[in-house]
Length: 354
Image 1 (cartoon, rainbow, N blue to C red):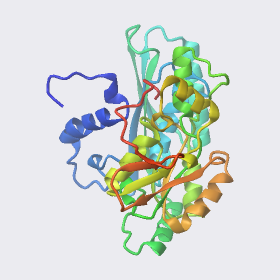
Image 2: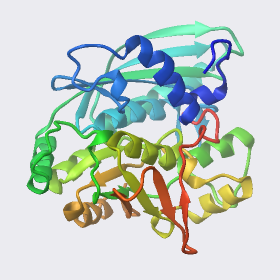
Image 3: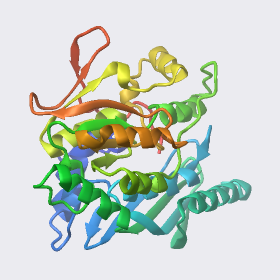
């Protein structure tokens, strides 16, 4: 990246351009913090200091209301889920509002009520924050930042004990992107691409024959149940910007393993699939806000899958692939019998989905 480039929308879209920006610039200045167990330079979904997980996330979704959710529900869920996928239980949040002049007070109150309801679902509280106002026409409504803290749980400890039954050399204290080994299975908790297509339909006034609803929701209770009742989980992400394709490539790059997924196992709603075909999009690259991508030791994969399918969030869960030492990167076994590379996308094809 050269010095005279300017920021573009791709720099926030969750793919290679955004990752390069973070690695080449942000990590350059802030990545060397000492005494941090999981630091910024690890580029996991959150950071760890001792037994505390810390996360900050900003949301600029446009429009602020979309089928199945709004910017408030999205902001709370996003931070809660990024804390949860490390194995921690979130318990306190902060909130910063940047409001555009002209935003209707009634709309602002709808966003606040939605945030309150989402906090109740997650079992967390917003306890401090800040508010700023900028000129009309600057934002498309508002931008919301939610930061949060989480802590270790008995469920996480139980999960790690289960992992060590099958992996004597496993030393990690958290669920990290770098924990996968060859043979581990990869699961997804449900259909992919729902959120990105729901936001796109609101942005462009598109109709796909049936209303596609965002999957946005907090997943921390589901995560704790999986950890405590099944166990064996070593890696976990919520595949937001850049979708499942980006998340799989993060797993592969950080764990230094190949990943093979099976096209016929990846759950996609028929209306989402049809919409993607019509628009020339790949569902694997479209963002989600209520799904988990999970790496599990192979001996526990079926148990985790069965437990997922007993929950509302995981009814359509599938084992979609496994980690392998046979190649590097991510590949997909197609339904016609060949394999194709699943590269990290340049960015999420739908702008401002979160």
